[in-house]
Amino acid sequence: MPASSRLPALALRDVGIATSVIGLWWLGASLSAGSGPLADLLGVTLGLALGALGFMLHEWSHLAGAVLGGSRIESATRLRTKYLFSFDSKHNSRRQFLTMSAGGFVGTGLSVLAAYTLLPDAELASRVARGTVLFLAFLGLVLEIPLVLRGAFGKSLPSIETFPGHRKRAAQAAEASALPL
Image (cartoon, rainbow, N blue to C red; front, side, top):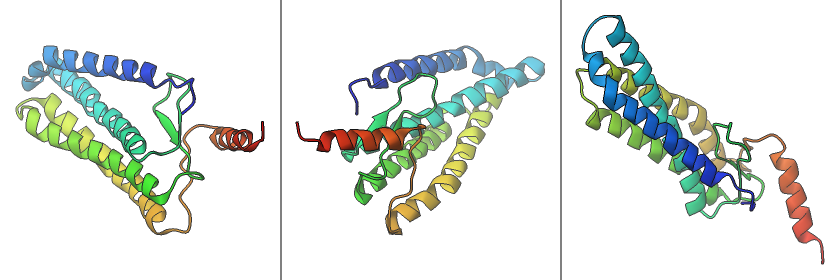
């Protein structure tokens, strides 16, 4: 990871978002147990917001898997991104790819578990949050299982770099490190 890593700033951003969503949930989700337009609006809005935290956990869990696996990654350089890092498919091993991938699935599993064990059944906001988490889990399976299978059994790792220009910067960095001083 380059010295210009934005991960601490991204962590603060996401902790701020999560704290805000959880605070708003705490203040308003119980109102979604009622009926009428306000209950419906709060239920849908707060449920979608809380469910979206599952995506954040999924992405941070991918990062945790990449770090635990000793993967070569490039940190996001901007705060206005949904992805935290780019995985270097050319220089990481199959084991590192599978460890990084498994991290995301663990995060998604934890999101589903939390949604069904911690949220009260009577609130519309809970049901919307559960539906959102399940939808994101479904998307994760549909979009990521084929990549995992290609990574596990293919000749090479799938290209999953998430930032434009990552391959070019990675090649330049590899070239620069190979130059004699």
